[in-house]
Amino acid sequence: MVIFRWLSLILIVLAVMLLGADLVATLEKKALVVRSFHDVLALFDYDAKQFLIVNLPPQLLNVAVTVIDAPGWLILATFAFFFAIIAPSSKKVRPLPPPPPLPR
Image (tube, rainbow, N blue to C red; front, side):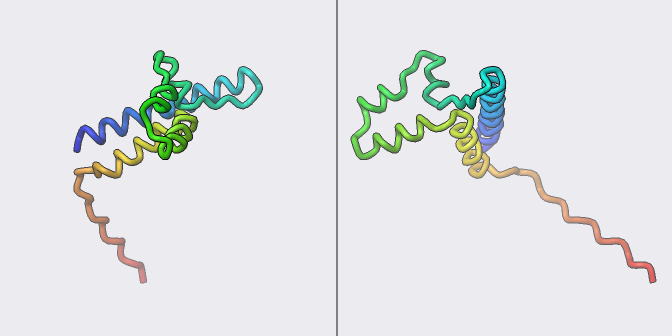
């Protein structure tokens, strides 16, 4: 379970980095810039759309292409959220201290 928590933190950091990069690009170009997950994967010379078109049946193709065309930071943040739910914290929650007595 520790690996899921670690992976969740790494994906959150990457999602925030992508969101910051989109914000900086938007400020530079003075127009809204949102990089899709496909654009992020294209930075590593991987054509995800072509792979999906070749290998997926037509019933799943539209859903998969829609996910790939979503903003990159949103996809990574969603995966990080699911990994965080899978591996809850192992810390024991301390009970709250009793409230102070009311002055009378």
